[in-house]
Image (cartoon, rainbow, N blue to C red; front, top):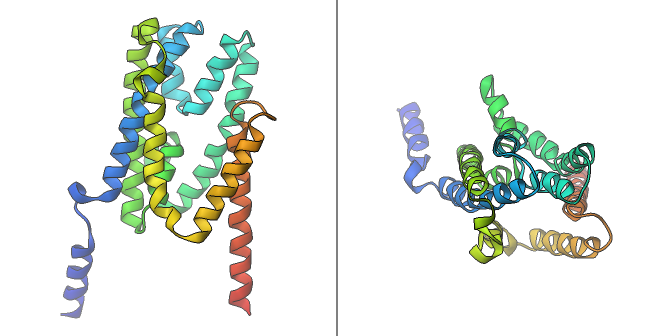
Length: 242
């Protein structure tokens, strides 16, 4: 009877997909971020890339910051090698995400390849915001897959419309993704330490913006947050030993 009760309790603790907060968060990030793909598609065509080159960047590179850096260098007159270097530098953060998500989700066989492709800011954020293993997996996969599909779809829309899209700021597309991230982050800022980390990283980012190339301030803030986390984990281990 005890075994049956345990199974029943575990089953009842599983949140249905329709009411899962991780699924809602993942879909929200997917829609908000995917729509901004219109901007990338239009800017990529304006930078001189063809429709299929633009689609290849979204499907294969698939990290918004790196993609915008790539076409930004090209439109500024830079070489392909310089554009690739800038994009690769901004993509370094995904390596950190990959290690974190691999330890958190433990994907196997073909899922590991797919997980590597959809490990981005949004999927990492959606997973990290959840409190249970199942919800972390749901958040990661729903956000990652929805962003991938919608980003590529709206990249194609932007590439086909080209100059007709105009300034993406007029449509509010640049603010949609930011708003989605703020909505995800806000509940976690009720505790003192996350709030302190957010403030410090924000200050460091603001100071770095006029001093380093575009995209680098985000990496500087990530290093600060990572250092803070490592120091906190080390202090916790010392307290346990004592």
